[in-house]
Image (cartoon, rainbow, N blue to C red; front, top):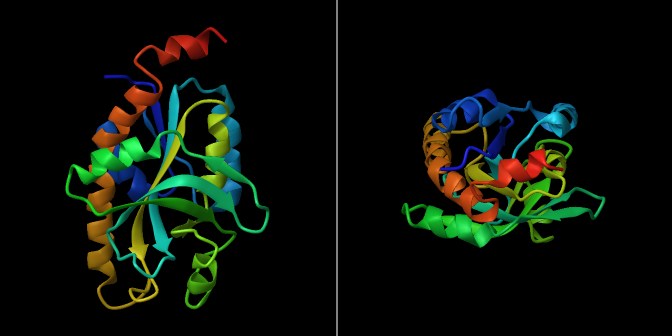
Length: 203
């Protein structure tokens, strides 16, 4: 099994959910765009074969519910039109569905701030399924290497971030995030290959 996968998990609870992948594979990168930019810059000196950004997110599409898993086909920034496409996201989605998870494929939006209330509906019209505050920035650290975004929905318009049932939703979302670990490793094997680290070192 390849050890070339690097997983960026913005929050401590997200990194802990993925700790079974091994401490050398999971990097806690920090909350928001500013900390993400700092982490992405530091990653330019690190050797890895494939990059995943994994964590929780706010649901935009009205069909989503807490606990759904979104594999990003692309990640876009709010207002600038820039995007980064994921590498073979359908492969990761297939493996996750094989675990019985409810999985969506579609764009991920990186916002400057938390997206709440009616703003979710407005942003969903642009096609994004979920919103976070880190993925667009962290994805740049992959450079020309394979990258994929996987986000588990924590809150939706009908299931607000701070509302009845929030602790249970958080627990459930983190369990599903934990389940993405092995599929992410298999995805990395498929897109980068066991020998990808040697390729990186030869550059």
